[in-house]
Image (tube, rainbow, N blue to C red):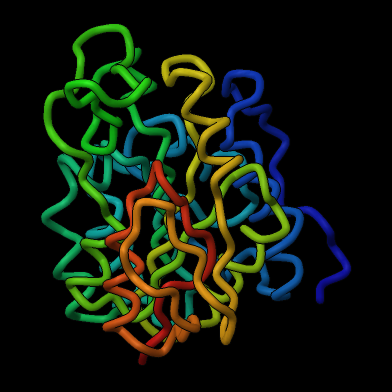
Amino acid sequence: MTVTADYRTGLKPVWCAGCGNFGLLSALTRRALPNLGIPSHRVLIVSGIGCSSRIPAYVDTYGFNSIHGRAIAIAQGAKLAKPELTVIAVGGDGDLFSIGAGHLPHAVRRNIDITCIMVNNFVYALTKGQVSPTTPHLQRGEGPFLSPQFYPPVDPILDMVSYSASTGASLIAQGISSDVSHLQWLIEEGIKHEGFSYISVLTPCVVFSPPELSSTIREKASYLREGELVELPDSSTEKPWLHDPGNISLALRLAQVPLLEKPLLGIFFRGK
């Protein structure tokens, strides 16, 4: 562990009060990076465009605030050019899973040693509330979750945990921004893992997401613990099984659990 307990720069974050990005920033700068003891000059954080993409300015490491959707592509290039760097790509659900979604399967199949942190706030927040690929939609007779202010979402949620499992990412995890200690652990595990690590961070937007979304995720969340029974939603017809993060088939089953019925937090899969 390093003596320095904080990797923060002097810049003041401009996020809204209560934004989950503060939790992620704390997990990175005051916990994970100091605990791993990685020198600042050996870390590169690459981001795209969006609220979470401001993070490189607030972390006292090398940083690159790139163009929309291209963080993973640039992170791969940096890691190939400088293998000794610890490379972290940070982006939101719109940035990584809409315009940038085409880069993900290729980063997975190459299994380049970068850690991808996807900050899922369920909306295009920086541009004031448009529907994103992960915005919960209201099916007829169900829900309470409508869109942000502009258009009601009509397409099903794009579940990127399920996508990552199906494409074979070598480490797949999910955390929540309000549990900084758990998020710290996931980030540390992602950085230590030799290969492409995907970490989803659930952080409903405090301005454009309905309050019920945040409370539902917190109240229904369940933690995955190796060797313990997986907690499934009431609607599931499956028999619970012991969690085995080394089993990709079980990870695929976990990824099919509806996010709004039972948000699962922890490491879904850890391969090679």
